[in-house]
Image (cartoon, rainbow over all chains, first blue to last red; front, side, top):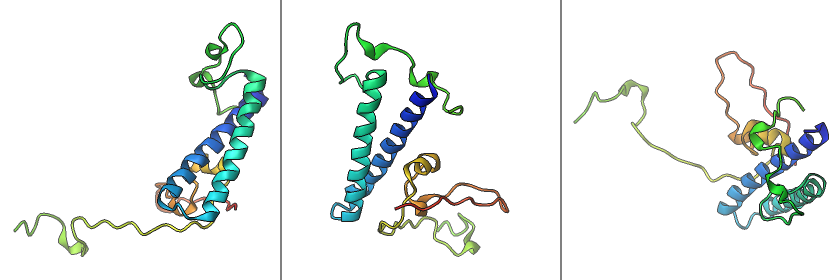
Length: 86
Length: 61
């Protein structure tokens, strides 16, 4: 996996995790506008990065469209990626 | 009953839990948050041996 692809994937994971956290916070603080602003900025960035990645490297989600053959099953799989070496 | 059931001289009840209502303050940036396992510095509590320096995260808002 190229360095650039791995870096992009890592960034997606970072924003994905941040969204889990803001989601949990907002579940108990639904009127917190600052948290909402934060959540929405992470969401926008997350969606941006995701479409960028999928356009370049293929679908990350089974819900995405694919050319033929079905690209979702191409390597690498998450357990094959060494994130210690970026 | 069960007077000596637990070590009383710690001056604590056996089980009394409380969770104060969190207020959003500063947050880690996403990179740090993933590494620290939380977005919230106030919840970043790694288990450290005594004397080991506690490297808190940089704040981001």
